[in-house]
Length: 206
Image (cartoon, rainbow, N blue to C red; front, side):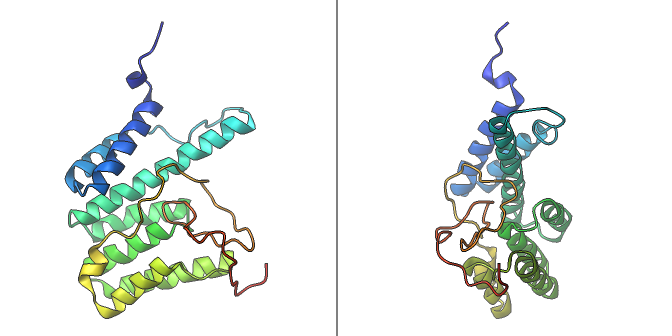
């Protein structure tokens, strides 16, 4: 018996994720929110859980887990664009608990606090992000996250409402990027930034 592609959850999940990303790029925020929510409804837990697999299959499972995190982040982005703020904090913290080096989620946490009227919470989120990157990776925050911090200090509402992530290649990177010296990973959407091959000036010796 042949199975149609739309009957396979993982294929539908990836298709809807790509559609939601495109809608978010086109600033169709309401449509993106609905599409990404539908995509996440198909997720049944970590890919390949309790499954003995080859190294190649494990890499595919990790890529799916990474894509799942990215979809969750983009859904937060869409909901921020629709005016939601402090009610998003628990979801953002849950993402960061799973992947604490994702600067996009730290930026979302800062934005959710600030736009919800809690500037002190935004500054506290910045302090937590810098401590996490410094203590565990020996790195400073990316230029994007530093600029967001300055926007909070300046009370630049328009800049803070803008999206943090840059729409790069939609293919996900590794689920838990490990520090590699002297490369500097900019974990925006879980992918290294354009200057990832540049030498990093670490505050802590590798």
